[in-house]
Image 1 (cartoon, rainbow, N blue to C red):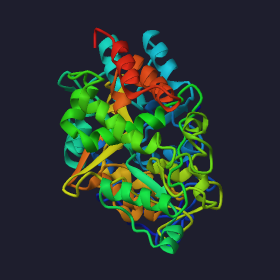
Image 2: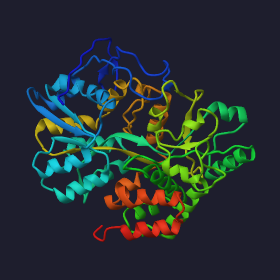
Image 3: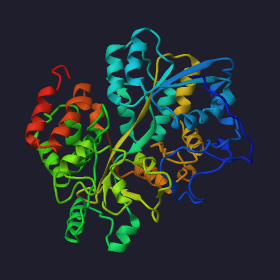
Image 4: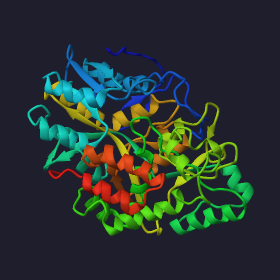
Length: 464
C-alpha cells in the first residue's frame, strides 16, 4: 500500500540530535509516562512540527521514491509510517510502505523474481544470512553513513548481527528486551514479597509462594504454526545465565553440539520451573497445558490472583486485556529476569534489521535516517500508546510514552548489559524455527531433556 502523509503544527521542542519536534496529540499513559493500557493501539500517532536542518546532509531528493517491505502491519504500521514524516518532508522523498503477514515467505520469492523492494525490515539475522548466501548480487552493503550511526548509537553486538562474512549490511531498527518476568506489584506488596535480585532469590521466592499455598508460575507456548517459540526464549535466557555468553555463542553457531552438557544443564535448570508441577501451570492446568496455552493469554491468571509470575518479553505489555494498567503501582509490571549473580546483566533481545536491495542515493539516505537518533526519537514520539523501544543510545527515554518502555530502553542501553540475540533466530531455519520449537512441545509433554536435545542435534543441517 502507498503511504498517506500526515502533517501537524505546534510549538517545537528538542527531540533527538537537533531535530525539533512537537507533539500536538495525546500521549500514552499519564504525564510522567507511568502507565499504559494493555492491548496497544487505539489512538492516532502524534503530529509533529518539523525542523529540516538535520536533513540537509541528504540533499534534495524531490521526486524520488523508496519502497519498504516489512512484516510490521496494523496497528503498529500507522506509527511506523508517521515516523517517516520528517524525512519525507525535508528531502522530498516519498516512502511507499507495504506491510505483509506473509513477509518472510514472499520476500525470498520477490528477490528470486528480481522484484525486491528497496528496503526490507528483516526480523531475524538468520534471514539476512540466507539472503546473502542465496542472493549475494541482490542485497547491497550498508553505506558508510549508516555504519557510522550504528557505531555511535548501538552496542557493538547489534552491528555484528547485521554483518555477514565481514560485510555490514543491516542496521537495527526496533528492539525487544526479552529478559522479563511479569507480576502484580500489589500482590507482591500485600504478601510481603520482594523482587528477586539473583536466580537463587527467584527460586527461593517460588518456593515461598508454594509454601504459602499458591502456585507461582504460569506459562504458554501455543502460537499456531510457530508453537514453541516462547519456550525457546526461556531456554535461551537460562543458557545465558548458567553457561554464559561465550558458551551461548558457541551453541548458537554450532561450535558445540546442541546437546552439549552445558546446554543440557540449562534445559534442566529451566525445567526446575517449567516442568515442576508445584510451580506450573497456575490457573491453567498441569505442566503439559503449557504446550496448549496460547502465549498471548498465558499471563492473564496474574490478573485474578491465581498466578504470581510469567516470563515474557517487553512486547507482552501490549497483550494484556484492554484497561489493564502497566505500571510499577498498576495492575501488572515486569522485573528483570535475574542472573545467577549481580555482576553482569545478560539480556536476551530481538528486533528488526534494515536491509537494502538498491544503492540509489535516496535508498541510502533512508537507511541512514533509520539508524539515527533522530529517527529513534521521532518514532518514540509518534507512538503515543507505547509498546515500542529501541537499543539506540541516542534515544531520549523521556520521549517514550510509558515508564515501562523507558525501563526497557535503559536495560538495552545499560553499559553492563551483555546483549545476545534470540538464539532460535540465529540458528538455521530447520532448527531455530523447526526442531527447537517442536522440541519444546515434546519436552513439556513428557520427553526428557536428553531425548529432546539429542533429536535437535541430529536435525542440525550438515552444511551449517
